Image 1: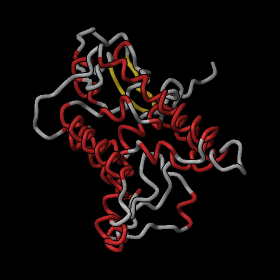
Image 2 (image 1 turned 60 degrees about the vertical axis):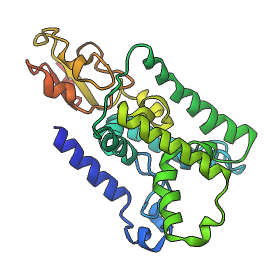
Image 3 (image 1 turned 180 degrees about the horizontal axis):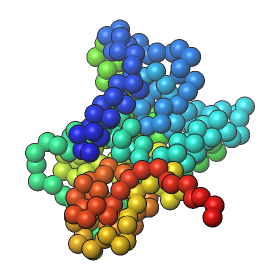
Length: 276
């Protein structure tokens, strides 16, 4: 399953950034496909991006005085969430895959211990303050994208600067701030699993609330479970899957399913109950 997930992540990233000539020409694709949102975090300004980022789109509309509520973006987020929940984070998000790759770099690893797990609440604060409240009520600026999002720095700023020398003259303090955040995140990603997904990502915060109701679920057969806790040891987010199959933090990576000695754990679409 690990290999299948890696392959799926690779193709999801390629599909989300199918405008490959954009990386060569240093131009942002602005065709009709940009009216649609991709499910994962993938910067609108990435030269290869053929769709819009849900978080960027949400901010672009909430800070526009012509709109009070972005029904289209909220509807898409709800659709993605109801269908898949945080499966999107684990299998379809380009920036999630980049963190997975950084974590494969050999180093001494940290774990998401009970003390560190409190950081999971930060992403809800960022969603509320930087994605919704500030852009809506204080300044007409996509605050998260402009001041925080490392995906924008990695996927958009650096490729565009590499192919557009005139842009380099416009580099200011904000770019260096975001570059610092990106470098810090890469360093953290090497030593601890997906720090951005776990504690910062507002898109992950949105999808997390759908984990309990999404059609795609992690399931446990209580009759087969022997409480060996191997699923807990295998989970990089320190989730005891056998007792919390609907955890907000579970990205449905499948590591617990692979390690289960009795096949008590499984993943898939909900089975529809037949009327008796």
